[in-house]
Image (tube, helix red, strand yellow):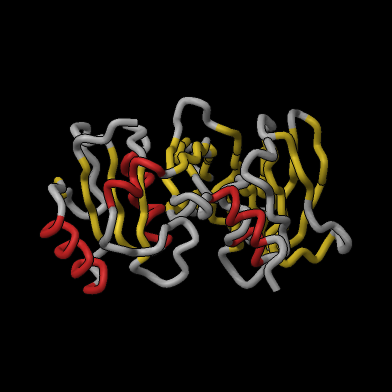
Length: 261
């Protein structure tokens, strides 16, 4: 890949802003607005944490411009190590990870239909003190007549080590061609701990007794309130490309996470 025009975007955090100023003083970079995207760049450097990276990926999804993140946040699972030296060489040698997002299609109690994309996961969460009651259908077959829980989520391999893992779901290798279906604090069925589904599966969640057990649905960070039904499937219309230093690829990091103590 020949890289000519390099854009740069940074979180508002002072640490990220200082890094942006240092890199712009050293290299010929195109400054982009916060979480912005542009069609006239070959690569975008994103400075911040994983949350900022997710927002940047959502903004640039339509253009499919590769994004190279450098950690100026906290965890930085989606980011590379921040260094000012040899930036152009690092970009030229970086490995590309291609990610297909999920489409979340919601129908609320008024019949309004809304569609949002998720890179990490789609999660359904109870809105009140009462547990949610949810029917789960996979590819047209009802698999659970009634899940009683705080919620349930569908995670991509790229997002399987995030919220999914924190609620007891499995970490999926990036090329596993699977989705993780994981309950959140399940009460009934008491022994159900989730399922692994083919990546092309369509999962439908019907919310039961919404009048007293309302549920919100979230695609990464985009929330839809009082949903009646949620459909989740892979969206082949969109593609996301992340760039990682050699020996630091997303695939390698996900595998290592499975052995972390």
